Length: 194
Image (cartoon, rainbow, N blue to C red; front, side, top):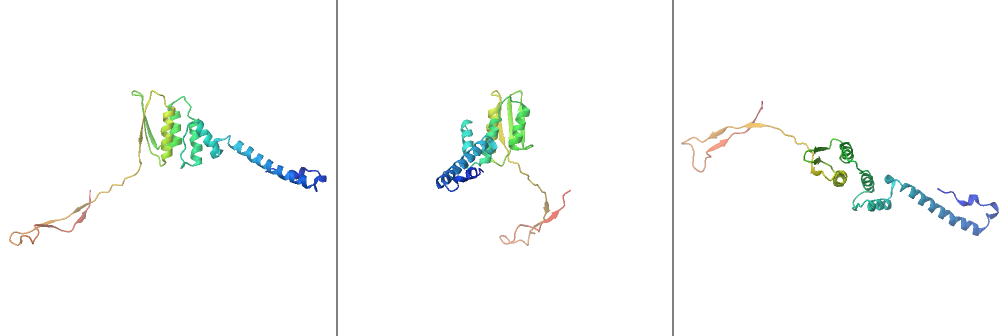
């Protein structure tokens, strides 16, 4: 913070009210100048930009921001778009996908014969899913077809069990029509599977 200009004032002005008021007003101006210089310096770096500077960068890159997006996500998206400069190669693509989806959280298949890129990916954030889609479309050569298959990764636990129950049938002669059931199951009991 800028020190008060009064420390630079000659001693014979100490009792002068007008000079004191003038220096007080100039202190405010210098403080505003210092904060504006600091803001301008920080806005020179994407990761430190405020919302106004990010909005200007998004406008330049033709990005339409949604109201629910965080400032941090918007900064990272601007960096991602600025780094999408060809030449396109497999290492560059994998590096971008690792930064967007995470390492080993996607499957990439390139069919060179048919010129098709197939990406199977899962992400917990819809904003990054969309950003990944836009990233690939912006860096892939126009001759390649792009297919994105969204995945939901989860695990399923499968267990097996078996039970046995005996069927008891009514005996002829002791059965009463409408009253005695034709067959009944006994209680089930677990059977060990081999």
